[in-house]
Length: 335
Picture 1 (cartoon, rainbow, N blue to C red):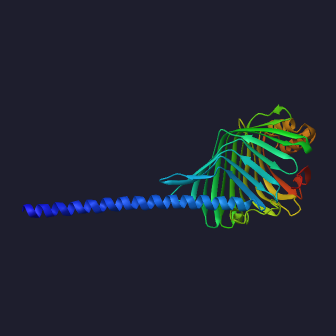
Picture 2: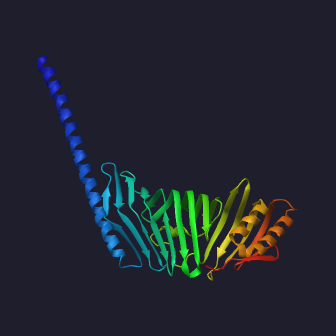
Picture 3: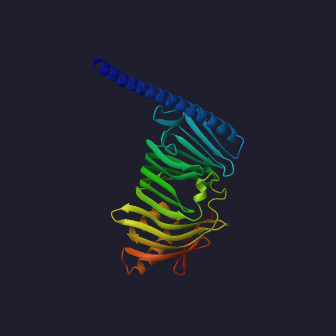
């Protein structure tokens, strides 16, 4: 009996030893695999970034590093810069931190620090900073599938010296979401408490939201990227573009729109407006040179509503000219 008990105990001990060896071996293989993958990713990104400097679309990542062991893997940069030569767009940002679960590397979460500066030739400059900016993206071998960005405490200034234009921008919160929808691209964006400083005049904050589907644009999220002529030749279904002044004073546009190859906008839009008088006064305040036209348009819309403060009217846009019924009421300059 004693011999049998000793044999059984020895068998159990050997099983524990084998299990311990297997666990140690698995940990060692996983650790080696993680650090190999991290090293490969860092080398690959370094090569891609260096090669991009010779192309039309370049990027740089200061002090590039890959971290996250044991269960995550992510790219870290002390600074980030992008230069798109065809569009004349360049941008610089603060530190970047990203992370993806090892078991789901195609889904990354990103944090980006400010301040940032965006420049578009010949002289457009947008300086901006924020309290917190987070993004998430889901990507496959053919590019992005969907992405989201959310930020708090946005403050910035847009300057275009050639146009004598300077606009300060602030928002308490903002979001943007894009996703593939078959061959189309769904886009949604919002800004809470958007405040503008135009020529030293600070306008009361408004809430802005947009929701649209852009036809044949899913490929923009692939390695092909958006066309350099964007937005020329773009068609979209505008489900909603709303601006809210608060206290029930809202404006909403919806309908199909298109930007022609010549840059002119065309479309057929439904306009729903609550608080016509308040909107007349606000727009006249922002654009004093257009105050007379705004008053005429507001009067026409109010007349169509039977003198009420709420109206639902049809707007037609033909080659950049906006019509209320048969009467032109404004112009949209070409892109």
